[in-house]
Length: 302
Image 1: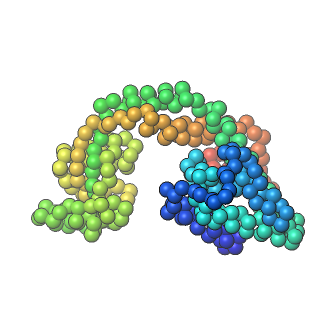
Image 2: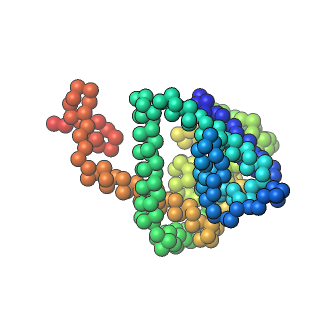
Image 3: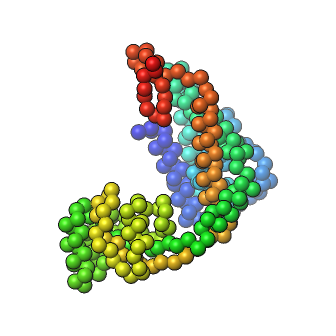
């Protein structure tokens, strides 16, 4: 494992955990006035090398999902110093790497080039996706989904999944004899993710959420009913319908981010496909024979 990442990761993890336990503390450093907010001052010098506040803030922000990092300026002093120790270690290791002339090693050059390309591609995709998806298109997609979902039914179901029909029939007999469905699911279902909650799958609509055979069987049942064994590609199910209702439509504010992410992914996928289709690409096997890329399949070009 990468020793540098272990060292820096442990130090920064310590800073993050310290923040979590002292987030409500009021920072106070006796005799030192806080610099003007937003001022990119020199926060460290390491063997004469200056490190600015913005560099430290960038490292701190990278530990959190985008836009969720607490403000560096309001950080409790002990947390801040833990973070700075990680930065100091990073800079000193970088200095040692430069002294060792590691940048000239072919494998290091290759990794650096790969990182450079990834940063460029990620930055370009971020800018491109912003231009492809507008607030108006997000709102329009929401209204379209809202209209298509009007009066759409959804069910809340629990299930027990086993490998064979014989197992399913035996468990169904047990349930009909009085064993609670939820307890049987906990002990017998091979779907461990839902078994812990008695087989509960939550609410879902008829199309797209579940495999067709399961969905059709579930929506054919009345509330409270338990199905006969139903086969799917995963095995054999016993389905119990916990509730049926008209699907609730969430407000735009709650759906906006999810819709925007979906539209951006679709738009970028289409954009990348268009680039691939318009590019002059030649594909060869190890013998130098020209091949054709067709939806991931390799075919000889005649």
